[in-house]
Amino acid sequence: MGSYDPKPEHRFTFGLWTVGNVGRDPFGVEVRAPLTPVEIVHLLAEVGAYGVNLHDNDLIPIDATPAERDRIVADFKRALDETGLVVPMATTNLFTDPAFKDGAFTANDPKVRAYALHKTLRAIDLGVELGAKVYVFWGGREGTETDSSKNAADALKRFREAINFLCEYVRDQGYDLKFALEAKPNEPRSNIYLPTTGAMLGFIETLDHPEMVGVNPEVAHEHMAGLNFMHAVAQAWDAGKLFHIDLNDQLFGRYDQDFRFGAEMIKQAFYLVKFLEDIGYDGSRHFDAHAYRTEGPEGVKDFARGCMRTYLILKEKAARFNQDAEIQALLQEIHADDGSFAWLAGGYDREKANRLKAETFDRAALGGRDLRYERLDQLTIELLLGAR
Image (tube, rainbow, N blue to C red; front, side):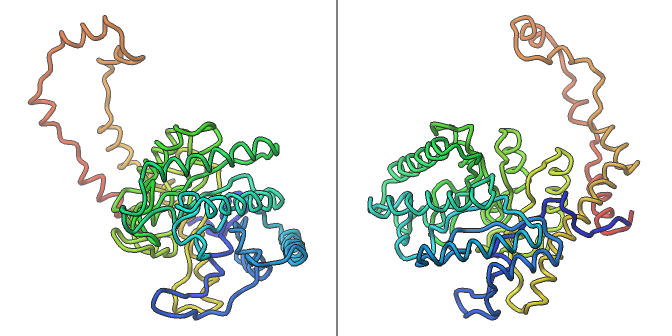
């Protein structure tokens, strides 16, 4: 049995808005007293986190004066120094204030679009000041309730122009910063533009500086659409665009639940952790989740510890999967290759195409092969349940 205590090399991070969540929902007021950013930093240090991430207004109220801003940032930096926590990622809140009720970068009103850029420029400066290397864009209001109100192509053009503008700003300032776009299909808007990780990956290739921009896939957001999150992460990794990741849990087809990592769909969580560990992903493991509304201060700590502990347990299970003799024997049988078609490697040429066209295949034998996936899946379940 391994140790499930988090260490800095695990790169576990939480947002100020996650452990600081006060338990408000559309049907009920807050159930927990708010914590200051400094208190949240010390709480995260107590439970063993590596870092803390933030929206601009998680730290600095939207109506703060310059003097108040400087004092808040100084206090926050002091807490980081005292605890050793770092700020790997930052982002902008472009969804809470009523000014963004019709979107930010995609709003119909050009003054709102300009204000969104103004706010983001200042928030980027703040993130860089605090040491962030990744800047996330979640377009929480970038959508519509009625398609009578907006032209979807115009909205994408506006979003593209905004990201291009911000990329040029980062280049002009000489910042060491990458952007990560975060997809979500709905909520708070009825429909949000670029709703999946795959849609974001396609959009990135239309930008002026696609090399600067990747994705920040989130478990809950893909599960809301009934999609396989690990597959989305694999696609992002294959494209070289997995710049950041948000971990939580979510039942398929529900509105955003943001449960503790592994709280609901443990098999999906296992495959995700196994994928991240097998490929050697070295970025932050960021938990964008919050404690149940039933919890008080100690329950919030239980929640944070639980996210990290579950990840480490599943990491150990993934290592056991890779070492399990029966599982590996089955995989070796399933992936058996006698090398007879090794000549197809390396891509197309005319000689290969002609040779392939001349081949004959025993379709009955191909269709009759027993792949033993039932046994493989059962062994996986037994391993997760502790029976192996």
